[in-house]
Image (cartoon, rainbow, N blue to C red):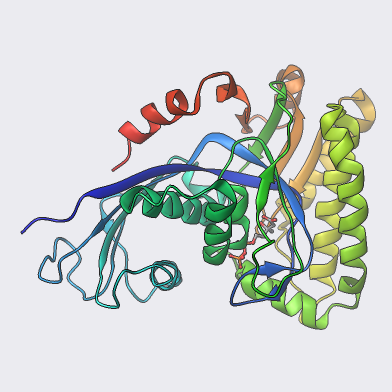
Length: 342
Ligand code: DP6
């Protein structure tokens, strides 16, 4: 018994500089506001996908789609399995089609780094490869968005803006790349916890939108932040980019704190990092800023030239250079990664 031909793809993870927080349509993952992120170059997810004849069992003994994380069969009761199966059902050739999906990530395992973004972007690209759809980037982005909103910003390298759009069918809600190449731009990842999130971002978004009075101000703030950060990215103005991104992230967390019941992803260690970073910036004038997503880990925004000085206060920081591989062609970047795919 053999499996069908395979589709194989890599997609990078991404970190939002201007956050996506709140949906206007939960089924289609349509956001209330636009958002803007930077992809993490070679850090991301590899996925291989095949159609599985029903008789073929492999390691996973259950019915339905078989999901492997590395060599481990994923429990079909998990949220991860449910989300992937639901997503695959958007494009199953027949209701009986079953898949074998193997996924592996080279993101530091504990970092909680938007793995759903790279995961659904890679799965979208693997489907495109398996069925030879030859879809355009906007079409791929619109499909990936339905798996996880932030995944629609992981189809291209560099700075990507997800346009919220206004149509009910979501056809105008997808990511496009900004024409900026900034080799010195650097993201520092400080991993503080590998514990699962106390509440998923999907549920946290819903509760914030429904109960936080501060949330009313959020769409206006995002519009202002986007208007400031776009020209700053084009001008490679790290001070403005960092200030706007840090303010945007902290404002998002303020809306979470004012939800009822309150949602707090920060731990005492997270807050300690805020204070250390702010004191360091004040003393040295070094442009280093923070951002934080739906977890306690902190990401730094700076330039490569300052990394050594910053390591004196944060020795465990892991640096990522989103534009490192951009001088190579896409194929040169992807081939070594794809060869390591499961
Ligand atoms: C805080 O894209 O994971 O990282 O659409 O429900 O899957 P779903 O949410 P997801 O949310 C990401 C939230 C964030 C901000 C961001 O990446 O913009």
